Length: 120
Image 1 (cartoon, rainbow, N blue to C red):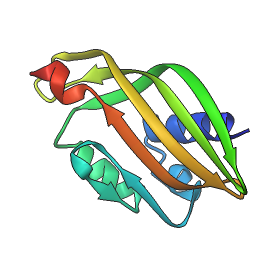
Image 2 (image 1 turned 120 degrees about the vertical axis):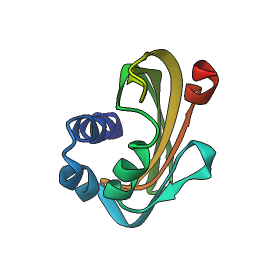
Image 3 (image 1 turned 90 degrees about the vertical axis):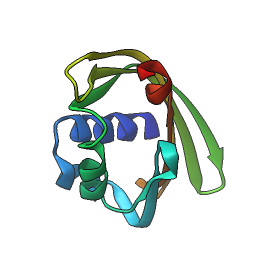
C-alpha cells in the first residue's frame, strides 16, 4: 500500500537517511515544494531546507489514495512540528503532500504547507 511507502519515505527524511529516501524515487522523479522550488535529488532538498528551518517533522498523518491506471496517487496530510532558524518552535502547521507512485516508486511529490504564513 502506498501509505506505507509514504511513511517509509517521511521516516527516512526525518532520520536524515537521504540515501534510503532517494532510493524510493523512480528515475526522473520530481519534488515540488512551497515557493515552487523543484528538486530531483533528496540531497538538494536537504540543502534548500537548511535555509528555512533547523528541523521539521510531520505528525498526525491521514491518507487518501486514488488509483489511476497504473499510477497510485496518495495524499498525506497533517501537521508540521519543529524549530525555526531562530530557535522558535514550529507547531501545528498544516501540510498536505501529494505523491504519485508507479511500480512501487515515487514518480512525483508535491508539497503544500502554511509554514510561511504561521511564521509571519
